[in-house]
Each structure stands twice: as structure tokens, then as C-alpha cells.
Image (cartoon, rainbow, N blue to C red; front, top):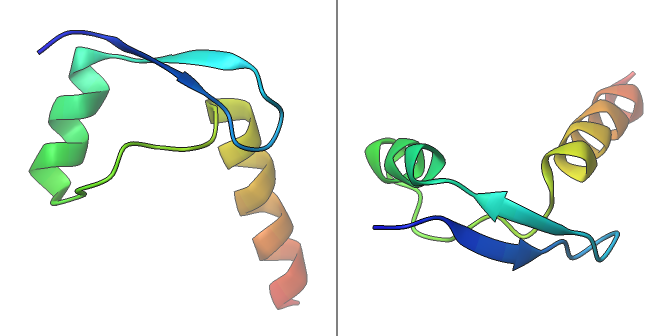
Length: 53
């Protein structure tokens, strides 16, 4: 396994999906690579939290 470079679906910025992150995803049973960079994932999660209330 090696680090993967991925383009964020939301902002278009390139980010690295590290081997450690890949192992974590595999351990959790996730089959797909992330499509958003960490910043956009954090923003999306925060927005979902605000929408709940």
C-alpha cells in the first residue's frame, strides 16, 4: 500500500490519503476512498450538526 493523492469533490484541492488512513478505513470496513479533503469533511460534518437543531 502507498499514499494516494485525491482531488476533493467540493473544493478541488488535492489531498493525500495516507497509508495509515487507508488502514483505518479498511479496519472500519469502509470500502470507498474519501472524496472530500479533511477540511471539507470537517465543514460538512459541522453543517450537518447545525442542520439537526
